[in-house]
Amino acid sequence: MAKTSPAAFVREVRQELAKVTWPSRRELIYTTASVLVMSGLMAIFFFVVDQVIAFGVRLVLGIGS
Image (cartoon, rainbow, N blue to C red; front, side, top):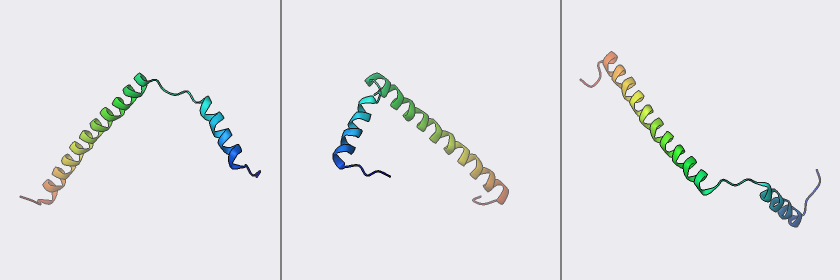
């Protein structure tokens, strides 16, 4: 493996960063909102599933009543 000097490494990193297609502000806001909404929906879903399973276990085992 060839050794690269720190200066060459920084040059190569800058060249690669110039090739990146950065998202627009609008795309960034929409994707961030989508992730937050989906995370919230999944949290609610798993909470409900957890409560249903806990209810079933309590019902079968007769715990807590």
